[in-house]
Image 1 (tube, rainbow, N blue to C red):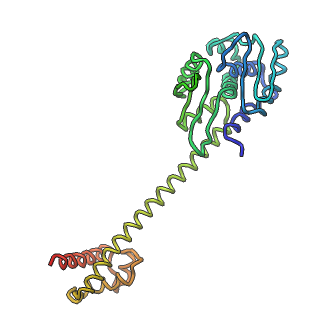
Image 2: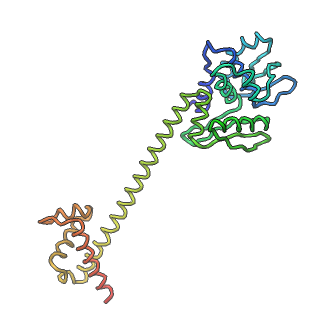
Image 3: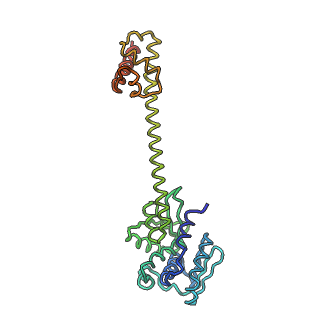
Length: 287
């Protein structure tokens, strides 16, 4: 079964054939933003081989035009280039982001290279893994201005930006144009909420049933003990009638029990008569 993370990355790398060069550049800058750059060589590793091949196909023409080498070997993408001239988002906004879709493609590239997301069937969590703490904090600050909140932690010498709130994950998916994934996440959330409501209702019904059964058994035990001890005739005729109907119908509620009488007795009328029988039994216990 295809993972949710893989579906997201498949969506964000399905780049339009007519995509503008400025958006491709933005995607490339996003891919490299989380990595350390040494001697103009950038290594990006991914478990999503198919997506790496798609990205290579879309970017290869652009990179040839700019005399850059772009190689893909199994799970590793190697960029040997001086194309990375801008190191901050502010610089990219001024020099790379040329149209309204560039920022979206920047975050697509960023998530493709360093992002992962859990299956919403299990838990809500999205992560971005950085080699450079400065860049991690810059992303954190940048998206916070858009109302998207990341938490920051460190793991195995890497800087982790993560979020666990479903609404925030939806917003981040929308930010990078992964609308199908965002809708899938919303649908998962709705299903989970409906399931939780159904479970709570079932638990509540079970609790009410158990409570009702316990109350019924309490009265039946009292009536049987009164009969066993030989005190049944001491009850008034109306109480004797209720007692006999109750022990003969131990699986119905008080409303249905009241309908067994002629004329019918209200729920409260049945309840008060049973309580008087219970009080009579307790008085016998005290003697």
